[in-house]
Length: 291
Image (cartoon, rainbow, N blue to C red; front, side):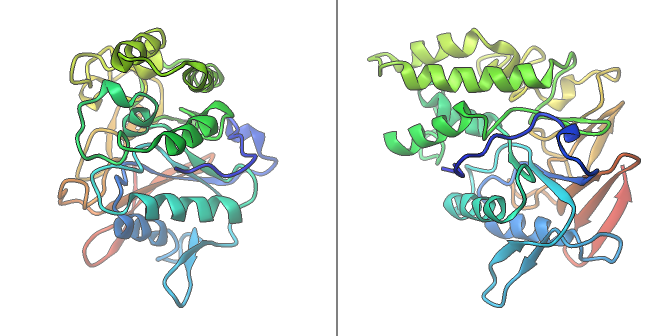
């Protein structure tokens, strides 16, 4: 699992001395080529500098740029290339300046923390061996894989919330929960123990129903259909769309073609202090649109 050494992700764009453009993508779900396609779409037109470069052998590397990359949850599961997606993100994080590459918890990363809660057979998240799971838990516990990020006008989390909690508080919650899991001996009934821990932190880990996605679900699980028009400005993923979709001040960016065969392209959002724009790679073109 993804665990760069000595990394703690900042809570806010204000942590940086400059005003870097925030580049965000969500719901890659273990599909390497769409991940590469989305990353390389930034810079495919002259309006934006490249986010990454591609070497002669096809490997993707961090470019000389002024970006913060937010992978807004669900990098893993469903697709065939989970380890390759994690390795690509790790390579970018190691090459980029400190704090410039972020990996957020999504509901599928949550399944690494709480594998006994989910009846997901043959999935990457719940089938990690004990050491791989503990490596990821240690990364979450030290703040390397947080829940949320405060951008210029938008807050970033995997599923969002109608009443958004303080970013620092929810990131501290995730770190504390991971530390608690690490310190909790394995239980014969692991599901009960994990559900009890998650239930104490519903604002982050709540499913909002037996199958998840309910109106009262936490920041990793709420479906976009439950987002109110008056909710605070956010960038979220989780709920699939064929194009970046706005409801009030909230934008859902879960547009990845290979994620269950969506007819959309690969969507990347770019936020500056003044603008929010999308780069969408379709089958034969790259389009830049205002959101």
